Length: 251
Picture 1 (cartoon, rainbow, N blue to C red):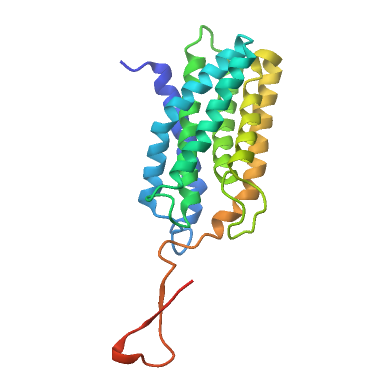
Picture 2 (picture 1 turned 90 degrees about the vertical axis):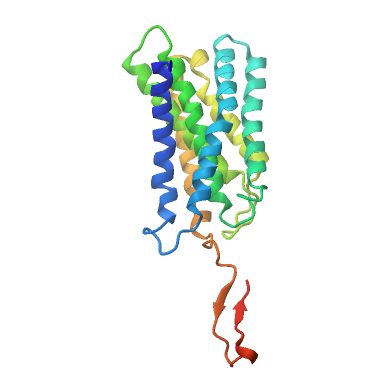
């Protein structure tokens, strides 16, 4: 039998992550644009893969938060390192796969993958709170704020982790800076046991707003990605080719 806390947590996590894909990634799909800049089936599969891959990272986040609650800072840092390092490693593997990572549209698939991971961690946050002894409106508001901050951290980390360069000419970024950024964000989310209720709200708000600020800087990359299949575009030759053959434009 599924616990109500898990069902509610799953609803919150899926709503947050799926809403991000619908609103943000959907901006680059028809009919919002003339040609969808990614393959929609691969995007759905990347999101589904993130839901399964996110399970061990949700466990690491729970262990991290429990260690912070118990004042076991060395263990907390160990679990935090496993969380952010494992997430970066998972995205690295995704973007080097033959299915998701060999096209210019791979940033979209990384976004779907990391959004799903954020949704599963949000599930753990909500389920952990609902499994407690007392529920308050302040507590409910806090876990919703933390859940939103987690999804924001994950999707920002997805673009931050991409190598420098790209069509927008970005000079910074990569897995290591992205891991440091995520570690700082998740550390702020774990300040509650050390800083009290005000610190919990402040840390979650700072992590979420910082992630949103950086995401607005990185999202330019998405608009400059060519649509799938744009590498070769047929064109009419200036002169009739021999034997009725046509030329092709190459990048």
